[in-house]
Length: 183
Image (cartoon, rainbow, N blue to C red; front, side, top):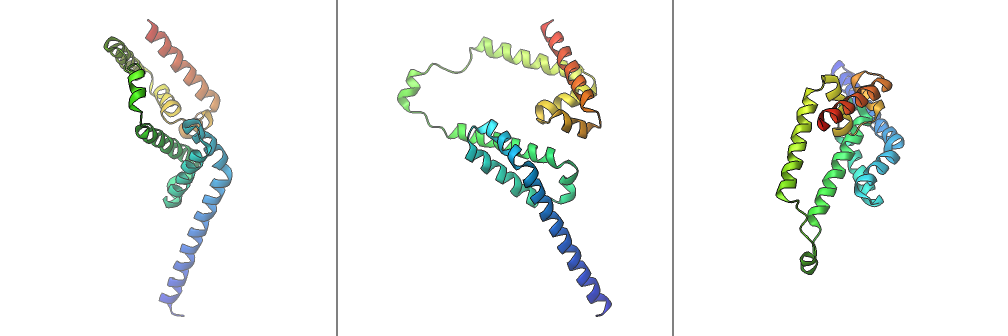
């Protein structure tokens, strides 16, 4: 074969190996994480079949990702995508629930009284202000735990801290917030 033909064959072989590695990575991810992802999704939606659909969507999204983009943080990526999809499903189901007109007349209004809504908003604003006053590492750990839904181990992987240090930082941040908000 000529030099151009050899490069073409090598290029096809390289693409084939990359695709095979990607397929193996996806299969390994399914084997390792499917059960825990289904349980995690079921926590949100309350239905096993809906949870399985959510996890299937997650793995379909994984198939479309470049391996280098997700391999370093595969578990975090899978749980984040699953969580976001589960929240989307819950929102969609809540919008789609149709109430019978006669049941609406019997139910009291669910909206809080204006003064309660104002008080709740003021508390949320105060809490956000207090969070912004925390040191950066405490803010980051709080965000990863409560916004990202990550475990201590995953937070440790992301931040480079030990799991014990993550727990200590989280405990310290929550204690400071509790103290400042009650003052």
